[in-house]
Image 1 (cartoon, rainbow, N blue to C red):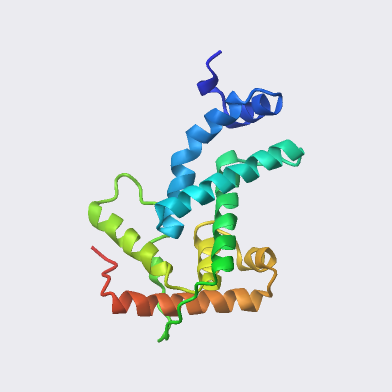
Image 2 (cartoon, helix red, strand yellow):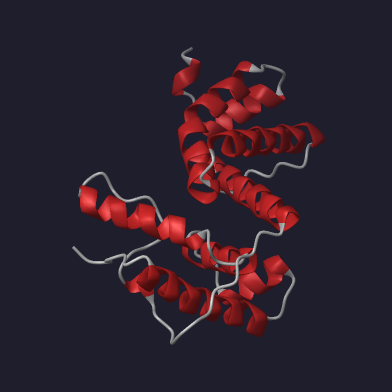
Length: 194
């Protein structure tokens, strides 16, 4: 049997039955995506590596505690864990530069907060890079709402429940995230079309 050909859920069951190779294959299979996601968030190789390790420690702890529930794609679950660990890190650091705002600007109609497809041109990739860098200048609360909404496709109701805030707070944070992002984009002279 070629273990590399097993589906994620089969590898999980292999690991849970005592074969650590199942976990090794899972980590190798998804390392690039999870690490890439963390790098996009934190823009620091060593920090992303630390958060990556922490993510998979949490995955292992969840497996070993018997609380893992096979609900949908394994990789989506791992990316959610990585996201939450990164947000927790930002909260502990309390890095929140203040930026004055102007009128609202919906940059999201120009570009989504996901990795571009292979077919996208180099110019489009540069737009993504500049936007992801710009997002780091938002307060952590604003970053969090923006990422949950546009990367994880969560509704504002889900975001409010996830963050334990009321829905108006979630909406307000999103509004200010967009206002502040517009200011950053204008200040850096980023062109969002090509």
